[in-house]
Length: 600
Image (cartoon, rainbow, N blue to C red; front, side, top):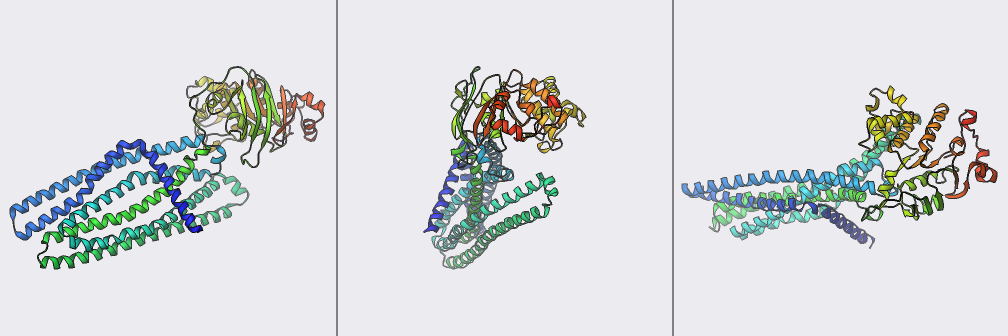
């Protein structure tokens, strides 16, 4: 009973994926109409070849020169007609394949950027790349090449069946009985081929993910002597991939053997039965020739049906992986019917917000907070209590499980996110730099930013000094994730990026955590100028960063437990005062010493 249920579920999943793939390709309907016409024409070519060969053999056997000329002319027309059809099919197929594959990959990327980050983060980056690259290509290959080929072979079989039946139904009856064994074998082999391909894809994704981890974390791998461990796990993943691919190839080889045996069994029948019928005068010699050449065209489509069906199964397996990433409709950010603008006045209000990366384990619990426009709000508290998460929610990177975030009474949601992200700049702890030039990393999409403004942003962020020492200055490529820079240099570039956007709202997550004492004192002055006239929310553990804030918010266990100024909270003697006393804070402005204190 359980096995039947699993099979039914597998079949339903396959139909759902096929439906998603077909809905996607509807936009290319004109191409598919043209493909259908070419495929229909191509399916007549084997019948024409069989008829031409029959006429040639009959003309030679009868010794008729005029009949031989007519047969040769007919054969030439069939040959050149088939050649034209073949060229047209290849051109159209390649054009459709290239265009639709690129569009599918673009659509997957577009949806990924709208996908709930909690869901997206469940997949390894290597797995995501494999789905966008290999799986999207294989899925489109199934639709654009394999399915038209499948239809062409089916039409060819039907037309040949009719033609050969007209020539000799007795000879056809035995030949088709042998030929029809092949689709039965194909159906039996399709399921294990699909199963092994799906498992091979999953093993390949795991293999790529391990390799990427080892390459990206090269320093950690060496420092903790993890090379042998990684290599062992990678070898095991490679073995799993090879094992499933080998099994898939063995099942495919079994289908090839069945085709080979079926073909020669059918040819033997045609020669023996054809000779008997010719001896009785029931058929002409040309009919035997037509059957021999047509049987190859009959068996080849049937054999191709098996191979093509296996390729279609492979494409569906890849499409499953693509649409897992691109079509989780219940977790994708809905595009708004219209884009709304946020008001120019009003405070930022966080009302009853609850959120968790895992909904069962919320990080923020019924959190309420008001940030006055034009003020500086500092978020403090023990590590892991939700400060960084709150900044991400305010920026709109995640949507709350409950509650809402509003500006001037208007919710910041799908309809206002575009306007909000134009007004706000976010400097995270984990700086996201791209494998591009320094200038492009500062611009971050501001394509029309003048060079003077870009360099001014770098100067204000105190990044111009180290940029000037780079081999090509602002045109120096930074490598993957900016790994050619130190942590402090990456942080200054992120602050320069925020400067360049000239934001109304500034969200800072530990903006000086990667700087030493001297650079931090300079950066504190820079941040004060950056904060001037803006609404700022900063998560920090430096006393010099938070003590002059208009509002200090203490977050503990995902809730706001205290709010007030530094002096008010110290006088209160609560959680904030305890954190200050327990920590080894020192005010840089007064002691000129590096600070430590409340953890981020």
